[in-house]
Length: 293
Image 1 (cartoon, one colour):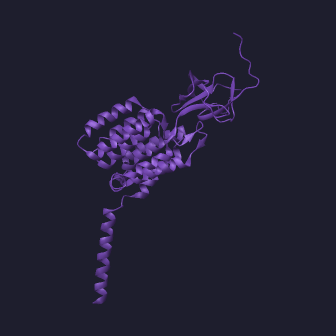
Image 2 (tube, one colour; image 1 turned 45 degrees about the vertical axis):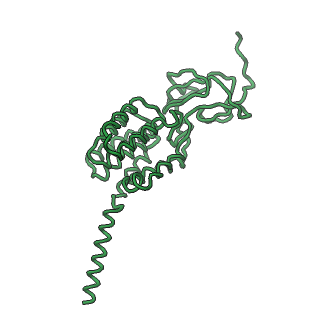
């Protein structure tokens, strides 16, 4: 009799535990983290991004509901501060979805994809979403947040963890992004609950996308630079041109995603061999001769 009572009590505890797990964090975390893992592997590499985008399309079409909810976050991680048209159209479509979790993640992903770009098309999409979700406080909060991210630093900041023309990677930036995205696996209980401060974990990922030049005394120096679309010159003989369709500007100048800058004259030389990006220290070229008037 005592054994039967103990068995009944243990089964009741098991039922209570399973019910609590269902009401708590039972959100198929391993599936969501696997989807984010695809984005981590593919980010920063164009061919990998194209392959990942195709995989995400298959997951949205054939995947289970918990997987579909995480795909917008994976797209955001794969295209941070890189608002490509196909990505914006995909996220805009799912921001009107009947599943609230999928809609929340899509709206937040739109903000991360366009962070600091002042993208006019994305801004128009978000204004339309603000009217569509006017009576939903959760979605409206995320729309306002996405609008703020789109105009991050009035267009002078970015969230991308890559710098020096994708030659170097900032692990701290990726950690900040992942902290926010992992918390969105169960957004109602974390990010949109009492843990709304998790948005501030994006702070380590914020960096300027300005090109500013200084002399050896760290005083601002105004020089002429050419800014254009980057060209892949790996494996090409000689000294091929590294940019195409360039325009001439004077520093400081903003660099968009996929753009590269080079000095327009030989009057100054950078003290490092890294691409011109961020804060650059220049030194006088001792062999420079001013052209005759």
